[in-house]
Length: 338
Ligand code: UT7
Image (cartoon, rainbow, N blue to C red):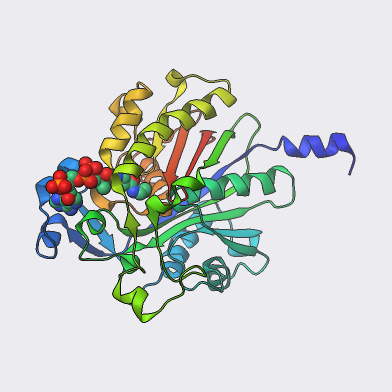
């Protein structure tokens, strides 16, 4: 391939062709949690904005949630599974360490021509995955990439730890990325990581550092451990920073944002970012009250709901901002194409 041809391909505009999400049926309210741990509805609502979260049924694993969201996204894009060239599943709760959840999804939906891999970037996973997908499409290697954020965090929850068990929920959101008209789609990307903050949000055991043992089970080390305060401070600092960076890369300003779709972890974190970006409430998508923090699934679920509510319109500048375990952060600025 000649260099100029290669450069032209790199300029290919990439956007979100279709979306879908799946939320498990069972709801656990704050009042249900009051009966399980020393907490109360008022504390949870005041400190987080969360009122309820959905929990996967015992027979539902992450891939089951992912498959449901994926099928909707593919149909929404007007495609079939055979049109998909690559499946990326962003998750911290894979069905198994291996095979990857992406391979399970690839098989289950019949994406027989697709490569598949999982991606671990905590709650930033879907935005990281979309950034990766966009590069495969921009270079011309692939036409359609399915990116899924899916989690069954209820399976790695210590239901006796009030510091964490009130925060998280299960769910899946998916999107098909592909070519869009010039000038539309992803305008800029900002990805980052600070591995030094890793211990603040961690599943300590079950990996090569600390394989599963009776001791690790007794010490509850197969569940989420989090220094909430440290993650909170990180989040309120990094969200406006990465948002401003991605705007600057696209040559846009705060006022150009039509809709911010942030990671849904805590309404206080979202409010703080919105304040720093001088965004009014009507320019922010918030649904944390219904689902809690669904990690990698939170942004694609919020995207789906924003679209259903008629809040994604052609020519809108839509800003996706995630942060999470790693510690990681990720922003994508999109000019909505349809
Ligand atoms: O997706 C990325 C992952 N995670 C996050 O984004 C979470 C980021 N962090 C946060 O959202 C907040 O730090 C939390 C919601 C986790 C905690 O809120 P906070 O305002 O930072 O509270 P805190 O940790 O400073 O705790 C304040 C008090 C403590 O009591 P003492 O020590 O002051 O007596 C906690 O023990 O609240 C207590 N507390 C609770 N009380 C009732 C902690 N959890 C609960 C609870 N119910 N569930």
